[in-house]
Amino acid sequence: MTEAVPIDPVASDENAESDVRESPMRDAERDDEIARYRHARQMIFDAIDLHVGPHGHDLLARLERTASVIDLHALLPDFAKALVRRVGLEPATPIVSSIERLISGS
Image (tube, rainbow, N blue to C red; front, top):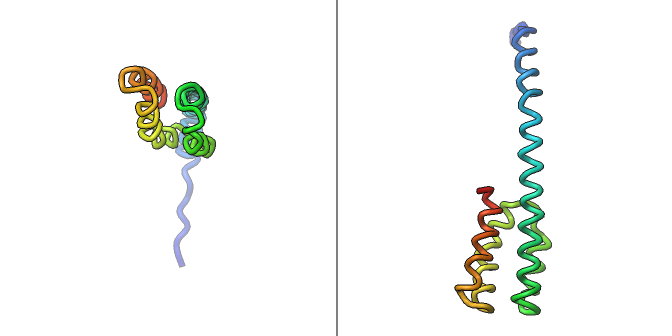
């Protein structure tokens, strides 16, 4: 049998307090990430709608399946290729760059 280890109530209280103190920051960071996700997702949707048109059906379907900025980051290279194909490199660059900055949080 294993021996019971006494719990230090002071240490337990300190850990609980640190979790509570960090929780609002985590919530704020999560809220920021959700806001960035929604904004970037809308920007991609608008760019596909405006510039790619019906050729972007597959991209729109993939965009609908995204759930986080990580998913949007994975979609970004294919989105950029489709956008460059339809409007050219020079007009596509600022659109893709602004979405990339938003996704990365910089």
